[in-house]
Image (cartoon, rainbow, N blue to C red; front, side):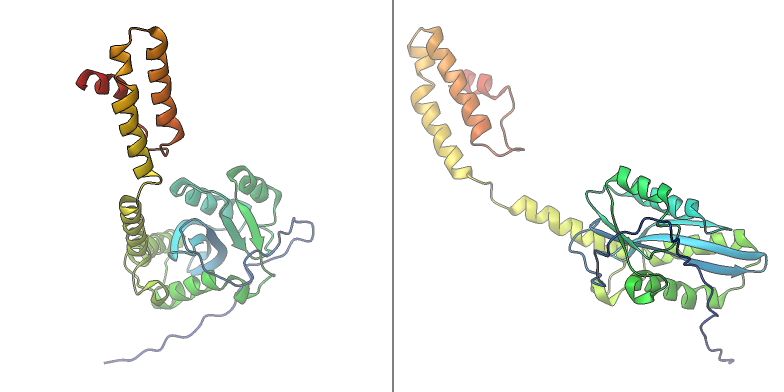
Length: 270
């Protein structure tokens, strides 16, 4: 049986700074941790050699689960490449002040990329140019891609590389590849676990001021509601209805308010 070692490929420069580009502050400072999805994204570009030329891959990765949520491939590494990867991530995720961390490559400091991030409500963060430690999670993914796919395959052309990289990301890395940093789960399974735990916590959490609401409601039903039937007065009926509205919308949390038909059901059953 033949043994074959895997060695690192030669270095190709994919990060070119732009002196006239807009540089964002480093909001991460090499702290690649997130307690929830869509709080911190990292992005970068790498290259894939083929027999027909070089293919460039741009990715967006969610730090929380290590999941690749956006990716794009092209024969160039222009701004359109990173914009396509970002658009894929935005199509899959709802963002609220998410931090998007990259290096200071010209693609990420371009006006078009900055405007799209501002439109989507994304906070830009940038490390230094060509420093692998300032974007360690992306470099970790690229290392896995290199060792587990690129060094073990020969791509006939760019289309062949695109198909195999697609299968690696969506067929292996996201749904099946385990990571020690997330409890030896795959990115998709880790997100599912988090979603299940969040739902259970929401379901089991006590309602705020729930007992107080129930006591007020009982007093309202036993004392004030019968006046609407005993006293023949429009003023009393108005007070009863108004007090119910105040009870419903002032003391009850959003999502637990009675429906508008509730007062009629209560009165009909009294």
